[in-house]
Image (cartoon, rainbow, N blue to C red; front, side, top):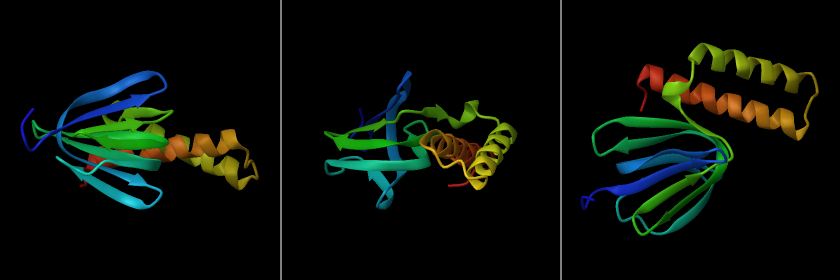
Length: 138
């Protein structure tokens, strides 16, 4: 591993979603956005639903939809651990938009149980990730 890189792994309840060498990681925690570079101080953060971004050493952007979870940094290794995580390249922007609208409608109708909130959070994370990936936004 190069001196300016770090090892990143993204793990969901279903298994490993992605792993590899990276130059940086950006994710949203309860405290706001955080950027991680090589040799970052150890940290444990609580993730909110977001589109985490990994810039690989090969210059690729890997965008991952997560519905919350944890981000851990220690010994030049970043772990993103989430109940749900999926690569944006596998998400249809149109389908994600429809799913988010459906979940938002259920919330507006008064369905505020945990399952409905979780459904909305996953749909919103998928939509944001797919949108970011398709538009090339940084």
